Amino acid sequence: MTLPPVSTKPQPVPVEDEKHRVQLEEVGQDLLLQTYVMMKTSRLYDHDNENYSRQLTRLMEVLERGFRLTNVVKLHAADGYFFFNDKRLRVRLDGYLANKYVQDVLETMGAGGFAFSEGVERSALDQLFRRICTIDPNPTDDEASIEKIHAEFESLNLPKIGLAPRMNLSSSGSKPKTIREKRRMAKQIFFRAVGAAGEAVSQMAIDKPVNTTQLKRIVHSLIDQILSDETYLLELTALKNFDDYTFAHSINVSIYSITMGLRMGMSKQLLAELGFAAIFHDIGKTRIPKDLLNKPSALTSSDWEKVRRHPVDGVLVLSSSMTLDSHVARAMIVAFEHHKNLDGSGYPYINRTADLNLFSRIVAIADFFDALTSGRKYQEQFIGFNEALVELTKQSGKRFDPSLVRLFLRILGVYPTGTLLLLDSGELGIVISNNPEDIFRPRVRIIANTGGFVEKSSVVDLTAKDASGDRYLRNVRHIVDPKKYNIDISQFILADST
Ligand SMILES: [Fe+2]
Ligand SMILES: [Fe+2]
Image 1 (tube, rainbow, N blue to C red):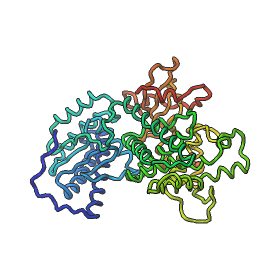
Image 2: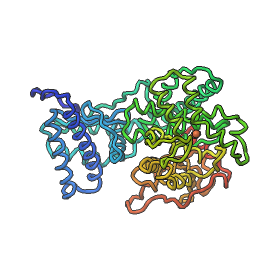
Image 3: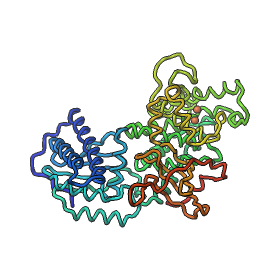
Image 4: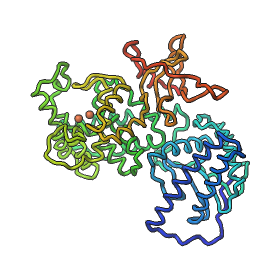
């Protein structure tokens, strides 16, 4: 099955106006959603089922609308985004699940997307989805099986349906293919980012000017990594035992913030500014004496006065160390506002009623969550990942923007990355990612079974069912406090396994 030949029929006059773009966006979003619905429906129903047939009719209708705009309707994925012909579709919050699912299926098919030519028949579409529904929707690591599936699709030779090749827009050279390679790459990017943040902060602490070019490049690599699959970097945010956690904290806050921005449909430019600003939210702390930052006892009121200066100091440090541009301007706003609360409380006190900047509201949530779970922050007690989410929810609407809190919960799920779980199989596992299909059933890295710690960890998906499809293979029994059992989860996160 190859791409359909370009039609000789005269193309419609290209109308690059706003209306045309809106139409492309609407049809593209509908086509993406209907492709997802078809992938799901074809799994559940036979082809003579009424519901399946209705969804197929809907797909035909969406394609018809597409053919009114262009002769060949193309839906393809690249770098985490979907494109309808060449128009990049916005990442919609309500469409995120569909987006991820269709991407995963395409990845397993070894394809970048679909191309439908005008006149495509219902029976061909039916055949396409009949075959797709037999594919495991979890992306596989096995290139040989991907190639096999891909070849099967090609040999189906469905009239007026083509598979678009896999594409990546990133300029980062050769892409890692296996999960092991992807994890290794994520680790490289993460530690490079922590190192670069550390270097910049140390320079700024002694009032030296900082060249932001390298930092911007680092943020871009974080974005590219999150765009291709956020799982691997999110897993690394659970590492807490750094000698100096300050720099890992700033990178974690950046990773959480970028992930939130991405789910909100922000452009790469905005994501870059958000990720950059997040790194420097606490830069004003370089003006706080070290012994005060690490003070084990409760802070006195005069200590607090010093700590509460760091948002204002942050603006001053940024302005004296960096040349002003849009990234630095955003960073100044975030540094100034990240301890201001939605209800007007917080610090620094300012007599005004203007809303807090969106970037500041995002960073405030990421900062709060990471600080609570880090166990290093001087004024907060360490609590587990799950309890931190409960705390965050309690502050929703008071300190934090409730819609952003909801978004954050949706990203992390009920059991955030890094949570240690005891399963009813007797196995112990660390949550590596939330399952967007079921936030109660994450993907878990098994580190121990009833016989003790396993030599090589493996990843299981808690949404997996037995052969009958009626029972889940594993269920969560309860959360386990790693400290109680003297388990250092970081060694498992860093282990070079799949
Ligand atoms: Fe702060
Ligand atoms: Fe912070």
